[in-house]
Length: 132
Image (cartoon, rainbow, N blue to C red; front, top):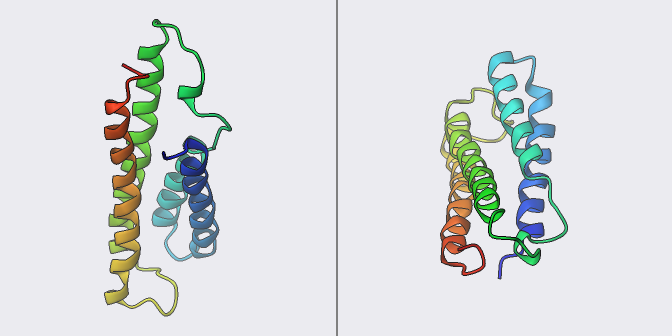
């Protein structure tokens, strides 16, 4: 079973990695750098990991719709950030040295996987009996 802590920790650490790689390029194209920094800062805030899975808590029936709504918004936000990042990689003129135009496909694939993974979790959650 996919553990929430490790799932969110991976997204959080990736957002820190992206932020540290974007800060040096700030002077080259300020608007693109600000957009990218804001995007990954939001992703870091959203994905800050918690130690327990939400399903480990006992929830009353009134709280279940709120928890489902929160989880849905969080996972869709993580997905949207990474799907937008595909286009940022495609159109970024300030890629690090050594990355050619043909090599841009690798970070684009990585962002696509990171964009699809929360959708997979949403699908698995919809099959879970604990939140129904």
